[in-house]
Image (cartoon, rainbow, N blue to C red; front, side, top):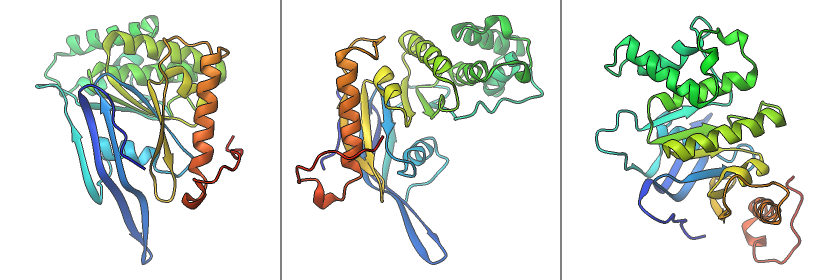
Length: 271
């Protein structure tokens, strides 16, 4: 396998990345020799089977886990206040704060006054379509609305890189599609670099510039599928269906032993 490269100026670069830990005298290798570059403003989706190390890769990038080997380079804007923000699978809102104060939470050490922080939070809530719910409590929101608040909170700090760890997996299909539209609109307006982890192939097809497929045991980059059609994308179009088949086939190949890669066996049933 060769290292994957992205066109234009890179903002994120993993070089020979490895992560391992010792447990009960056994060395567990989670990531090994992973090379990946991400271009500024790119929308990258990471797919692979459960436990392959997708979420770990995001945690290494944002500094929540330390790599055992290799390097991680981040080329953020000069003077950027917040290089990265992370949106989790669940919204993780503070139940004792109103919606607007949850969004403003990440700005508390920004040097802005309370009024300025709340004004910024209000702008972000308007961007995700929740401007009229600013004074509600988290328990008064639906699951999809809470996740929109989490996205607004991440965007409020103006990150160069937005990391999203399966942010829509717990939502129903209609809410998920609606949030895809909001996320794409926000990305088109503010142009952060986005790395999103998902198990949903349809989500990858709808959102990504590139889908990178990881191979397990240990986790490393295996294949890249480029999605060049304009967005929004019709999931029933021939281009979307072809992209979905390409990702599914790559996922199937990622689960075969390395020695079987050269064999012309039919793809398995990953899905």
